[in-house]
Image (tube, rainbow, N blue to C red; front, side, top):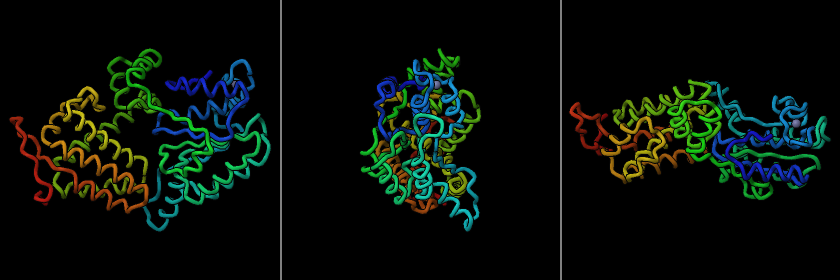
Length: 364
Ligand SMILES: [Zn+2]
């Protein structure tokens, strides 16, 4: 039984293709982080190799359990581990390169493994997570591999950003879009199936932005929510910080980026969501904000900024993400972000805020 949540039509399509022995030789699962791409791919791998033809995947036969436990000999995967990159520049740069990009050698290893017949199942599954992080050479190598796939091999590429993939790679795969779940549906699931309290479910469905995997993890692990609070509070405080304090912040996030790229980009995502919330409040769509537990702060800041400032800064955040992708020096990107962020002074005790300080006339 498929346990993927919120992708009903996709599951029906995949399930039918397995039952009809009509699966594709390569799939591209596209979607935001934590939307369930990996869960769906693993379930497809189970279905392809399940020993229980009445219900593929049964999740309980030897083959399914070995795939779910990551022990099946015919499941090969490439995973990036970007955490814990040493800060030492000499050693760090090479290690970082290996951990932030999928290299040709890794694709070649998988290609060699794919040439051998399945060892214990019906299909060999070659799973590449973060496929949009292949080097150009690796992407060209996978292109060749997808041209002439050996029989009984299914390639599964997982990616967040289609623009970072070669279009020729995209066109050789069957594309599976994995969408976030509508918040109301996720909220019901968290209460009815996972036993979450209604208030907790409402908050998680909103701040997860419909990303099921994130919401389920946050339900289990309180530290995820604590981390999110600290990043949101950072976004709130930055607006009223002096430029000197902002540049200190830039140095910290640069160091974080070198240590743990995913954590640093998540921080940038939190900023983007915050600024999008400011835009929603500013344009009278407060009911759609993500950070529903910070509505008062969002409303207060939105009153002190113009729509143009908010819109411009959202543009800067999206440019920053692109610059980081094309390897612009991270410190320059972060410095520019903290410098160009509009600055508002702290509200007065009476609740009457000071006007926005023009960007270039700010203090130190
Ligand atoms: Zn099974």
